[in-house]
Image (tube, rainbow, N blue to C red; front, side, top):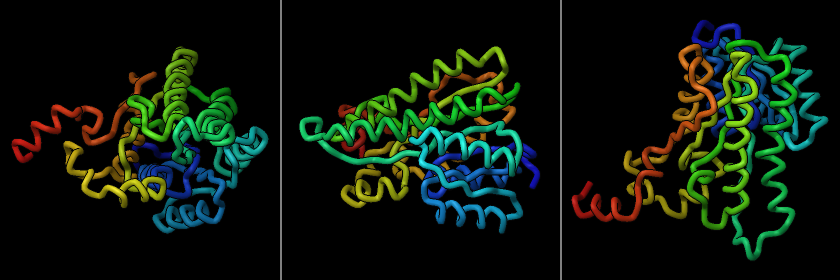
Amino acid sequence: MEGKLSNRVALVTGGASGIGRGIAHRFALEGAKVSVVDINLEGAKKVVKDIENLGGKALAVECDVGDENQVNKAVRETEESLGRVGILVNNAGNVTFNLVSNMTTEQWRDMFRVHVEGAFYFSRAIVKSMETGDRIINISSVAGLTGETMGAHYSAAKTALLGFTRTLALEVAHQGITVNAIAPGIIETAMTKEIIAGAPEFCKDIPIHRFGTPEDIAETAVFLASPGADYITGQVIVVDGGLTLYNTSQQLIHRALGI
């Protein structure tokens, strides 16, 4: 397939579902060869089959992103099958909820292990062979900008990912490699299913009046991976339907005006 990413090799972590799956599909439609990396191998294989049915080329790779050895192995498998990775999307993530007062050390550490250490391991393994025009895209969250009740560990990990993004961007800018982050709002995925089910009317408090979709994030990822984003690096692109702009006073005004 021909497109903005033709003949590029992209590796997407957490690619078996949700935002990762959306990005993998969209990259394939733009002509990229996609390595779908996930701890859920069967899910990754389904995504690969979907991409192949569309006429694209993809590879399913099983990997626990918090395991350094598995990460290095996943990168080798990708390079051997598809070629040098020019686009890396660090998307793998998980979510749990707990108050700080009740949070276990294991819950805290696991959040950083997956979100932060995973991004570090993959970036370190791949950036050494990257060339001018290559891209690293980290999937953070608006929780990394605003905080999140019962999610101190998640918010802290996503904030750390933003610091990592900015620093790595500075380190590799002279090589023509860009590093950016996307901060999604509430996106309809398996991870947010319980949140949305518990408060379906909340979408009315989002200025655009709907929850986001994986496709919304995928479109932004395609732009950041494309030649059109050559002069953008170290940035956080918020894709949240205006959620982070909507404070309490604005909510009252909107409700009073019926909009």
